[in-house]
Every structure is written in structure tokens, then in C-alpha cells.
Length: 375
Image (cartoon, rainbow, N blue to C red; front, side, top):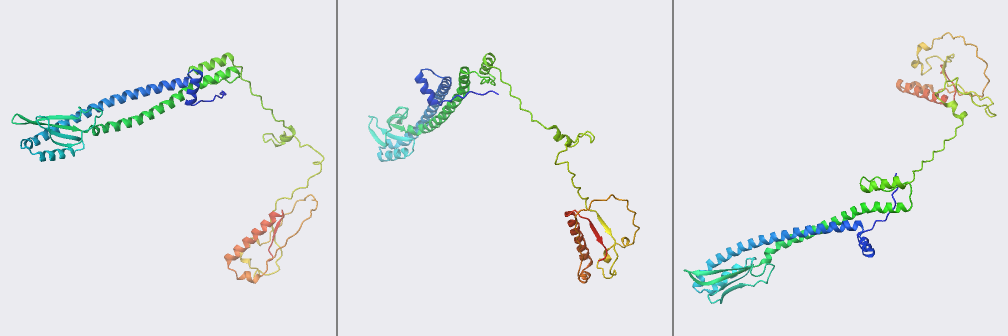
């Protein structure tokens, strides 16, 4: 595993400061500056082309509107001008300038005197006054009676272009920031391994940085490792735990019984261990009944086949066993009259529960259970 040498990454402002201080431009700053300049130049060219297209479209729209308004207004003002109705001319021009696209309108006589006027003359805009000024002659029976001048408010035509340029400026700022961030990341991706290898050459160890890269920097790192890096030290083997052969041989399940070694004899194990008593065996011993079957409440629950006397088998001679301390627990049911009054299902359940309790007590104390059929 390659151990990368820690190299502190600098931000954009530190890169500029170090470049100005040491009079050398690092790779990251050079890549970032080139990309930002290219993106900014492309955005400026695009904005210029789009601005020219907007201006051309604005000129065409303004020319069409100006020619249509001057033609209609001149036709309406011809009769009023011939009849010298100045009041009607002012009303006509006043209605015309109510249009937000029209800034000023005036009718001049043949000697260039103002006969009627409405609105305010606009200031010089982006396209100049001549671009928004439209003039037409007013003739009556092929005789010029005056001329009409209309000035359009070009700021209204420039508003869509201004909004588009603002949106384009915001988009350009976002693209420049993104290009700067990606360029700095690419530059650091190239310059950081080179700085790590420079630090590695000062103190060579077996772990050469950037050897896993699949580019020219990776080829350079692998060549440096082949030429200068010492061999990687082999890991020390873990010490094997020591086992006592006499402890676990007896517990090996894969050994035959005759192959298992005998357990070691010591002072503690030389004494014979007491034998554990055998598991409790339930035996039934039939004793002589002291009372008749009519007095026994459990008489009808017993199996009559088991009450017949059976021949006792002759017991084989048993080796004498050392006597052990023991105790005898005798339990006798009382209140026979109350037991007789119980229903058969309740009596059966009580008998089974009584037997379970006796079995549990016999198992707990490792004793034998004898059932006596004498009540």
C-alpha cells in the first residue's frame, strides 16, 4: 500500500500571493488562469454577438412601428391641418403620445414652425436621436401642407435586451466560478503528486507516492520506485501460541478411544471420586390396600389391569454398594370426602398435577419415586 506524503493544498488567493512573491506561476494557477481567460473570452464574444442581434431586431421593430404611426397620424392630420384646426391637432397628438413607445410628436408648417406638439423630446439613447426619429410630409392635392415628426422612446425597446444581458452576466459569473473551481482541482490533481515525490526524494522510503496513477505521473513514480526505493520490509511473523500437549489430547473428538492418552494422575486426582447417583427411575410398588376401593377417590381412574398381582422376577445378585445418607419424603392425600365431590375431569387434572409435582421434586433431589396404591 502506498503511503502518500502529506502536502498542504493552497487556495486560489495563496496561489496568487506566492506567484507574485516568488515570481513563479504554479501549475494549478496557470491552468486556472488559462481556463478562466478562455471561458471569459467565449462569454464576451457570445454577449457581443447576442447584443448585435438584439440591436438589429430592435431597429427593425422600431422602424416598422415608427413608419406605421407616422403614416396613420399624417393621414388623420391632413384635413385638420388644411382647415387650420390647431386644437384638434393637439388632441390627436396627445392621444398618440399616450402610447408608451411614443415619446414626442409634433406637426410643423411649411416654414418649419410648430403648429401642434405633445410629449417630451427624449434624450440621446443608445442608438442616438436619429435612430428614434421618424418624419413624414403632409400633402394635400400634391401640395405640401406641413410635415410630422414622431420620436419613439428607445428605452422601451432596449429593456428586453438589458434584461437578457443581465441574465447572461449572472450565467457568465456562475460559469467562471465553476471553471475556476474545476481548473484548481485539476491543477492540484497534477501538482500535488509532484510535490509529494519531491518531498519523498528528500527522505526515501519503500512507499513511493502516486504509483497507482495510470498516467505520465504514475509512470514517473513507478520509475522512481524502481530506481531509488528500497525493498518493502516483510512483515514479522506472528509468534505461535504454545500449547500443552497433555491438556487437549484427551478432548480431541477425532481420536479413537484406545488412542486417547490416560489423564495425568496427581495428588488431587489420586483420590477416588464419589459415584453420581443414577437418574431417578420411577417404579410402581403395589402395597396392600388398607381401605376398600369405595373409599379411594382415584379408584375409577386407575387401570384395573395393573392392579392384578404379577410374578416378581428374580433379581440378580447385586454387588454391595456403600450406604449413602438419604431421606424419605412421604406424601399422603387427605380430605378424601372433598375429593369425592369433585367432577371426574377436575379430579383427573388434580391427579396429573400431583404427579408432575412429585416428578419435579424427585428430579431436583436426584431421588427415586415410588407410587403406593394404598390411598
